[in-house]
Image (cartoon, rainbow, N blue to C red):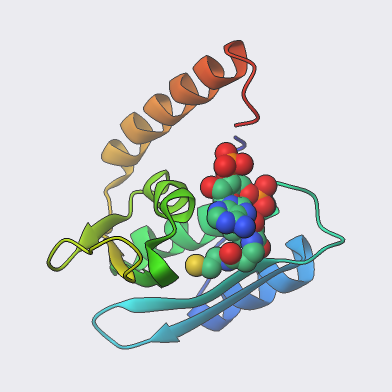
Length: 135
Ligand SMILES: CC(C)(COP(=O)(O)OP(=O)(O)OC[C@H]1O[C@@H](n2cnc3c(N)ncnc32)[C@H](O)[C@@H]1OP(=O)(O)O)[C@@H](O)C(=O)NCCC(=O)NCCS
């Protein structure tokens, strides 16, 4: 994946960029201690991967300002839990039973940790592509 970096000042800047540049609806609520991702949706006209680009911009912003991100995966949809895990989110709270909502959180990272994570992400991506998957 390309590395994205934009100097956003507020969560609204990130949402506006995602909507205008990527065609992704990204609704964010700033609770002060953390930023809650209340909606992520790629619009039909936007290419596959646009959602991931929006998440990359958002995680850069969160790292920049040092704030955690939180979200809820409705009904604990496993593919979505795996999707968000790619960006560093992890489940929080007591383990959800099958079909229950899963709350997830991502802690802000330093630039050094991020570059190590990016390397792992790239290795995983190239492995998936070698195996013929649509990563
Ligand atoms: C989730 C979303 C933003 C991801 O956008 P994207 O990065 O551009 O990539 P894609 O749409 O190609 O989806 C890639 C990944 O999203 C997840 N995903 C996509 N559609 C999904 C669905 N209907 N149910 C569960 N997971 C889904 C999968 O993890 C998928 O990866 P995979 O193809 O390797 O299984 C986009 O699929 C979308 O708008 N989905 C509908 C709205 C939604 O479910 N939003 C999340 C609410 S928590």
